[in-house]
Image (cartoon, rainbow over all chains, first blue to last red; front, side, top):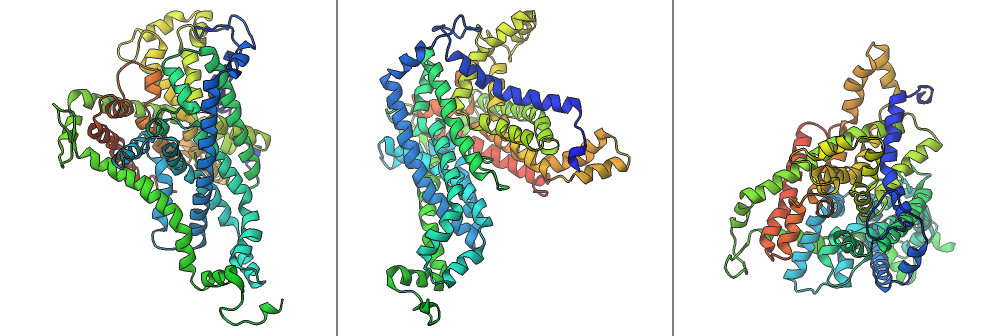
Length: 269
Length: 316
């Protein structure tokens, strides 16, 4: 019924203009990665070159920051996968007192402004005399990554029929076998999607990280320093482009994994 | 398969795993508790514990002479928030959050409306990914892109220059308060970056609420003689309101808590997030930083309460 109505020209125009507004700045990042201009943000670029890719490739600090980011994001994702899936399983399998409170608790780290999460963690680490290290970064990241895994898993558990689990048990499988052969295959893609989004979220996080990191720099922290005090504009341009490409992949992946369902991943960053 | 027929309670399964399974089956609460324990312990200790310690610190104060934190209960730190300099920071941040929220509703609505009502098949996927990719792109890269755009030698100046509208840009920048030397050091710049970075957070909830509006409702409204404007005003808008409120919670909260955007693009006047960062960092005044951090929480709580009172959640 809906499709036989035509949208007004103005609505379509406004919608497309809005999408362009969202995408042109990102497109600009790609252009600037090739500019020959090294000391200003001149537009249009005076010339195009591939040299900065080589310069960036040989930069040890960029690789170090990238390595730390990947390490933090991987460990946080694993922790978030375990905690988020457990929580989703518990919440969706039964109704119990405090169920709503648990959903709220999981969402809170991302619903409150990042600075609140950041400074809370920092003041807690201070009070508990925990030195800032990779561990404190991971503690923070895992905390706000739980919610994306949880959201994806909860949506999938809702579609997983309880009679399948009962049937498995009736046929003699124990809980662990049921989990391994029935539950896991059913929720695997949702977990994968949630994990990818958690990775992307952690990989990109900067606000909480500035509060929980000591001397080490994750890639976003490295970028932030370059933004505040630009020293290596061309290198920053290249890194920015690579980061955009790297974050696009998990999003596209998560989209194709959960496309069939009504609950598509990523809708609740 | 004979096992399945010897139905004796408790002896259906053998082995440790089997006996554990039986135990879980007989006592589902135990399994539930085991499943909930790790996430709840993690979030409870690390997150709620931290929030609590933040709240606690905001009731301490700092000794003005020694610069040390005095660990006794006082409201002195909160009183300090009301000093003109600090009060201005709170007011400035709240006004910016309100402006960003309003503007993002205006820009997001056509996108959501078109995507929810008219886009089908391929077009729908394009709109979905078209919002999702900017949403998930690196926050810093997005801010960086705007630094490129707003720079004096950047694309926006170039554009205004090539179409001969440079005087317009200069006139806008000459305006008091919102203007500045260049776009990248003015409130207009800060506003644009905030708007860009949080816009997807407004589009998605509005689109979700519009998807639920049945098309025949709009047809009925038209059949009963309402003009397009009236249908929009009395049918679409009220039904989209929960989405708008949900989106505004994001844009408002995120703007309140951000300290990076105003630091990179904007005048040197502080926002709440920057104040928190400055006080906990170089100044070492953790109590005041904590008190500042409580402000967005209170504003958000008040905002949610108002939204609830206005019935914005009833339709959810």
